Amino acid sequence: MPAQPLTLPFDPDAERNLIASILVDADPSKPSLKACATIGLTPACFYEPRHQLIWNAIQAVDSEGALPDEITVSNYLRNQGVIEQAGGSAYINELTGALFAPSPNLRASAAIVSEAHQARLLIGIAQGTIQRAQSGAFKPNELAASFAAQAKAALQAYAPKDGEQKMELHDLEAFDRDNDPNNLIGKRWLCKGGSLLFSGQAGSGKSTLVTTMAIRWALGFDLWGIKPVRPLRILILQSENDLGDLSEQWNDTCNALNLSVSERARLAEQIFIYREAVKTGEAFGILLEELISRHTCDIAFVDPLLGFAGGDVSKQDFCSHFLRHILQPCLMRTGCALVAVHHQNKPPKKKEDQGSITSTYDFTGSAELANWFRATAILRREDNELPHFVLKLGKRGGRAGLQDQGGRFTDSLRIRHSKVRGQICWERNNDPLPADDTL
Image 1 (cartoon, rainbow, N blue to C red):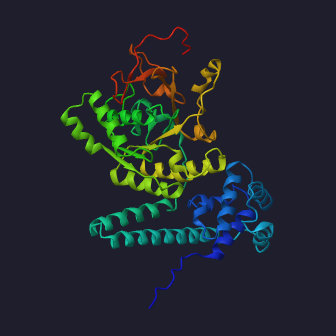
Image 2 (cartoon, rainbow, N blue to C red):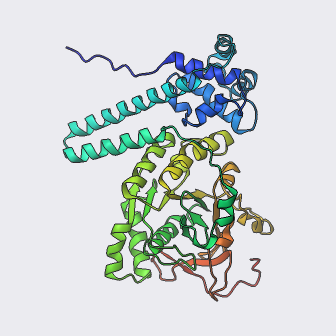
Image 3 (tube, rainbow, N blue to C red):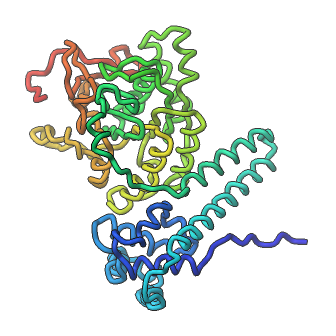
């Protein structure tokens, strides 16, 4: 008997009722949007493609501070050139026309949509497990562990949660800034659930500097004064470097740091490196949380951010969704901090314009990136001929603890590629400053 086609679970009435209620009662202070915010709905939660487009428009309009009513959402879809794919104005009018007031069962509809989406995710995970089992390349315990980890991450990602956090005045007054249990690095420069955007020009050596950070902080050592509160457990998730690239960076950096045999052995228990060159967007968020949870990591390095976003980060609506609805919940649930490696804008051709490239906003994409990330750092080439660079800490840089060669606190440091020919690692640049240096 031939296999019956698989029917994926979804409730069209719940999807329509939910969207219509938002459009009719487009007020963030009322239950409509709150019901959806607490359950973490994203466009991917909807089965029908046109509902995904409409929901994305609702979130985009809301994130811009406007009310996501029928006219505003329709205009947004029209400006994006997807109004017809969303069913056209007639379909949106049909949705709202069938509902004279927000449904009293709005929260129930939101839960139905979310649960159907979770069920579809579990089906996809199960299908992947079946394929791996049929390949014969995995042991039963590996299959079971992988399914359990992926299923847990999928369910946790859409578990009901309250995004609001009321802060009592007495807690603010009693807070000890010098003994924050959530602090990870510096003086609350990077805390649990926090984030750092690390940008630099292509080919500057950002990945090698990430390797240096990871090794030093995993052992509890400082990097040029930037010190962790304890040895940290670190995840490196990257999409560009192969085994050979990583091997060269790793071995040369370890050798340059003169690590002992015991220190190298400790690194195997503290640092976990993965390459993922396919998953983006929602799938990346699930993978990231699963790996963080599996290894109980304190910091996750993502290299590069563009390799995992899965969309145009120059558009604020996409950027806000990726940062605030995919990455932020993962960091809040796990308590892990994020260091995202990102590309920098092309340097100005005129030398007199180059002083501006250490701006907090010097990166590819929407300004939402600098707004969302707690801290920023920039790696900027200092000399066009020599491998000399400046590490500039932008947003909240004064909290990091960076020190110059004289032990003085600073927010910028001259560093360079190794003086040893062929060695791939970073070191402090103690060479004299050029005569026309403008730092």
